Amino acid sequence: MDLTAGITKAGESITGEEWRILGHIYHAKHECDSSFSFETYDPAGTFVPPHIHTTQDEFIYVLEGRFDLYLDGQWMQAHPGDLVRMPKGVPHGYYNKTDKPSRALFWVSPAGKLKNLFEQLHDLTDPDEVVKRSAAHDVDFLPPDAVKGG
Image 1 (spheres, rainbow, N blue to C red):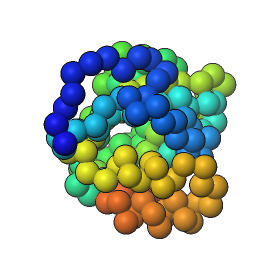
Image 2 (tube, one colour; image 1 turned 90 degrees about the horizontal axis):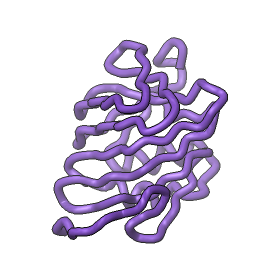
Image 3 (cartoon, rainbow, N blue to C red; image 1 turned 45 degrees about the horizontal axis):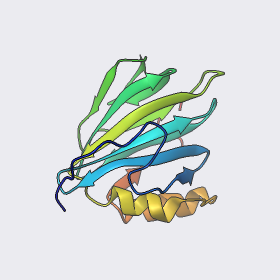
Image 4 (cartoon, helix red, strand yellow; image 1 turned 180 degrees about the horizontal axis):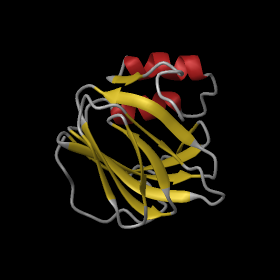
C-alpha cells in the first residue's frame, strides 16, 4: 500500500474509524507499507503495560499531558514536544499516572499488523484475550509481574 497525500485532522481518523481499547481512544492518521501512525487520547490512570514489538520500531510524539514510560529497563517521563524512540525488540510500556488526559502521535515502522490488531481489540474487555490477539500480531506482552512499578 502506497502513502496517499493529504491531511488528517486532529482528533479524526483517515478511515473514519475510532478504536476504543482498554480505556484509550485511537484514531488512524495514515497507513502505508513502510509505516502506520495513530493519535491517542489517554485518560488519567490509563496505561499500556510493557510489551515488545518483534518486527517494528515505534515512536511517540507527546502532544499534551505527560507519560511515565518503562523503556529498556528504565523508568522515565515524556512531556509535550518530546519524542520517544522504542526500537523493535526493546520492552516498553506507557502510563498516564496524572489526573489529566494525555494525547500523543504514535507511529510504527514498518506498518506490519498493528492496524489489524487495533481493529480486533476495539471494545474488547478481556485482558487475556488482548494478550493472545496481540501475540498473533507481533506484539508480545511481558508477564504482569515482570516490571517493578508497572
